[in-house]
Length: 310
Image (tube, rainbow, N blue to C red; front, side, top):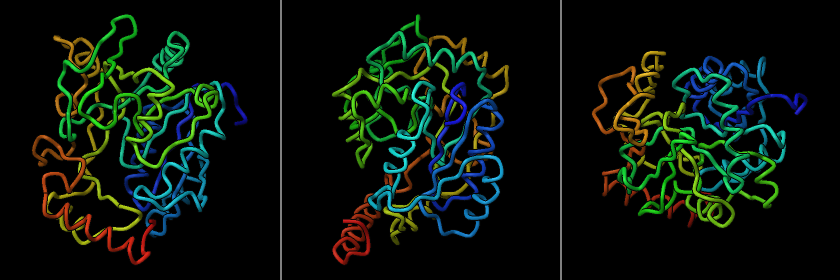
């Protein structure tokens, strides 16, 4: 990277969700104006997304590399690895995806505090800057998170969850630290979590994060949509459901909340569209057992006929 003094490097991965990508970038520009932003697109072929990428190239670095993988998550982890290898080693690197947004302005002092945390916690590999969705499968209770006042961080403990203790795909890391252990992203989040456990302590979650996953975003599996997934998205009203940005008053109120609880998204954030019921789902197939089974069967048939990545 040309400017080694950049306080924060932001990498946004993208595939065929132009409206979401544009929104994600807009919130980064508004809330993190000092960040160096790059977009790594996974061979999008949707005309709207291509137009968005063309516009973004005027002010950000856009990579349209191919051959990064075609598994369940497409080339996501290949693009994350390439970004790690290209990053400035000593500047914090934040990974975002096109289905998230920044929800409040973040003063540079908070980024400096994150950078300092890596220095005071030499075995820390990842910080999750994201609010925790209530609707996640295997949600942990409040008691599964330790809080340390001196750091202002919650620390998730081992639980029934298959991931989200040592690693999250939405994260802040220090590239030099990952390179020092020879980090290679695996092809699924639980596998990355298991790998992070070998090298690092449990990840940190700020008491007041600044990123959130949008609920009910249209999804792909291996860059494809099964009939079952399309049906589930129709039933769930999947679409564009962005958050309202937190005001300074909102931010101060949430910082001062008592009792201090983990940052559950549904308790602290508000959607622009109030029509979605609580809890907000982030996987349209969640709770749709027969559609989930049909989706798995369709995906298995696709692999059998070599329509998708084995």
